[in-house]
Every structure is written in C-alpha cells, then in structure tokens.
Amino acid sequence: MLDQFFESLDIKTYTVNKSKDSEILDVLNSNSGIDDAESLISHGPSVRKGNWDDRNIKEMTVLTVESISSMFEKFLPAVEPYSQYFYWKYEQYELMSIVARLVNAKAHYTLYGFMTIIEIIYSYPNKRLQPKEFWLENIQSWFKARAIETKSGENNIQAVVGRGLLKGSIVAWKCIFPNEFNIKSRQFGFTNDFESVQALKQAIQYRDISIKSWIESLLKSENSVK
Image (cartoon, rainbow, N blue to C red; front, side):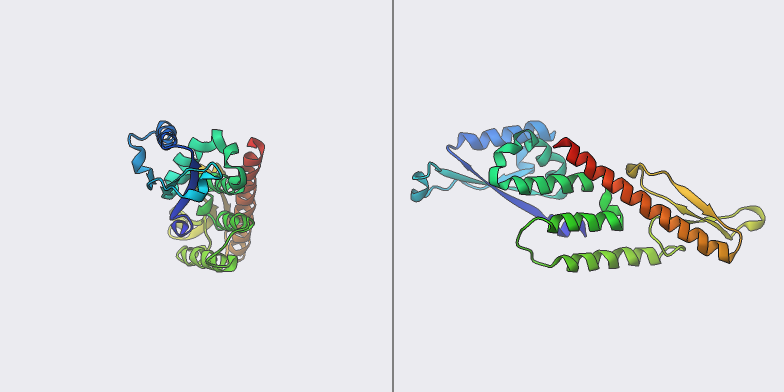
C-alpha cells in the first residue's frame, strides 16, 4: 500500500548551463553507492525558451526519482548537504525527510506508524487526489484484515501455546515487534478465560504505548537534527 503514495517524484531544477546537469548526476552517483546514476535518475533534455533569458534562467532539467528506496535511501541523503538550495521548495524537502525517517525505520509496519505518516503528509499544503480520510480508512481496513488472521485478533500480538499438560492450549499473549523497532517483546500469561481477556487488554495497552513512544522518539530525533 505504501507504494501507492510514492510511485515517483518529479523534481525540476533550473540550471545556467548543461555542465550543471552532469554535476548533479556526479553528486548523486558518488553518494548513492551505485555504478550508474542513470538507474537512479532519469533526466529529460534541456529546454530553452526566450522569455526565460530575461530572468537569467536558460535551461531546465527534469529529474525523475523513482521507487521508495531510491528516494528515501539514496536521493535524500545525497542532497541533504545542499538542502538550503531548495529555497521555496524546502518545505517539500522537509516533508520527505521526515517521512523518510519513519519509512526507513519501518514505522509503516504498524497501524499507528502508517497513520502518523499520513497525518504528517496531509499537514503540508498540496493538491491531493484523495482526502486524508480515504487513506486512513484503507489503512485501518488493511490492518484489520491482517489482525483477523491471528488468534488474538490483534496486530503484533501472538498466542503462546503451552507445553506438557497444557500442550495445545493458549497460555499467554505475546507482543512481538520487528528487530528494527528496538521494542522489547513481552508476554502476558493467564490460566482461564477471564484472565485471558484481561491479559489481552494488557498486551494491547503495552503494544500501543510502546509503538507510540517509539514513533515519537523517531520524530524527536528528526527535529534534533535540524
């Protein structure tokens, strides 16, 4: 679903002469860790129009950065040292930088993380093909469908099966997170149906608080860099 948000990004840069184009590609190539910058960047031919000469703008190069990994893991780190030159486009760079931190940390693997990304995107002014509510509803439906497939009926909460005399019986609910989250797993045991309900509530509470705290730490880390 994340791909639907970031299928491609067009970035228009105005240059005085064609040599600037190769400089841009050289910078990207040296920072992206790939042999051919063309596989990361596709740039159209320079265009010249008479009325631009009056403004000392002679050529335009259109750079198209495709795929989430190319954008967040290669392009943004490459241009970060030159971000002040985005001028009136700096807010867009700022937005992409914040979202990149969350996506690279796999925050969108959680419902709260994905919803946070959408909230941040829609907090910046821009023309939208869909209202914010459209994506929030789709995200909630997607995570709900995945949760139904689990015994707990919840995301990131797995059933712990007993051993010995309790073999085959569920004895605890365990919160499990990807290693990238740096959130400690924790399980909540029980011995009967009533305790099972209470244990699940505790697991849900622990999951929600832990994920929210982790997301907030990522955003604070982003703000501290600025």
